[in-house]
Image (cartoon, rainbow, N blue to C red):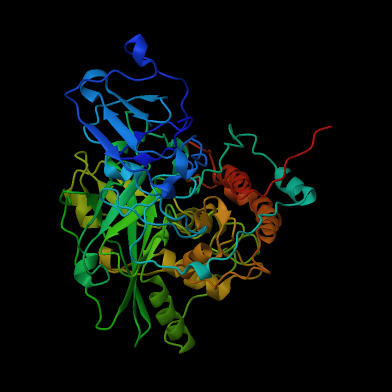
Length: 566
């Protein structure tokens, strides 16, 4: 065969083209690899349905082959002798030699099975891969897991949109932001997909994820049974590697930490509460037993997830949970029961049972910013949480409570780098603003902020222009292209209306980010220069941090056009 298609199979990567003819053995048998008579030879029928293979990791599709050229495909195993595998056809005595990194004992029959039909941009056919229900994307990407609870009909997925960058005038305003002379790195080259550019600057997404080079960036969170009940909230979630070949996942590693945050509403009274379920390594016990919350009868509960790595996959009791589109996870974000919670909360607001406090006025004379203010958001707004955990030297974790701090030898406090924490813990104090809080049942009812509260206040108070998840948000895209279906799933989890393609465009989002966001950054410079940075390794003060974050967001959202020289 002049060329051979390829696919990823059980960790074995097969090359796509025959780079050279291998000739071994006697002169009378040129072109054939010598094999031992004692070794078995498997002869399997060729399937015309397998003519064209999807691309894979630098390979090329299998060229068209006419039916009369297709004889039986002979697979000869020489692993005990040379650790090689050769594929030949009787009509074409040419062979391909593959050097294997490890001895493969059996080549599965699936190697020659017909390729599955290609799905649309938002949906792909699932296939099993170890712990998670993994899928193969059309571009050959790996580590994409399919949440079992999400099914989006193909007819609901809109055609890909074109991301329109800003015009030169708008981009110039963004580029002209006054640099902080004390900032050693005003442009850190952000734009890391699915990141908010806070404490993630140290993480490197290595292809192998392990080998001592970098932490595995892709982890799976096992959802416990009945996660929206009191007992389910108090049952720890378990963190495990999505693909064990890429290395382990450990909750105490701040490049892999996953976080869970719950919001509870009592519909008859409109009262809100917060709870923070714990995450532990799979197979381990928490350092202290989680607090079991007391929930009013008929409460509506939802949970949200944040992640310090690249892609978090949900597994376990995922009914009612959304991890993204099937085969295309959001990345750092997921939720369970969020639309139901927001429907109950909005109904309570409409009935006057729940009163959302106004944002108030900031020290700069402007309304205090919300989670939908263009001075707060980045390339993937409304993601991640305000939840914190305690980590012990042995890697075990516990809820962040005063009792646990006093009783346990705490090594560090794990925090989720997030838009929500940035707003409540850094921007609000710098501007003299107060976040919306509710009793935290994890902390004996102490008032605390949360993602759900920020979104409720933003919906009630944010003035135009309002920042809503755009089609060029990397976590709302599929294979790097806009997806209305996936964007709407993301929006539904944070109390936002469905995307309006006529208004909610990439160009409008970029323009508002460059104008409104930049104007507020300059206005508040004196206040934010005196405020602490969320990440001292990235910037020495809040102003420099926000400036870096803004520039990185332009890159990740494809807002800035290529500047012409000369």
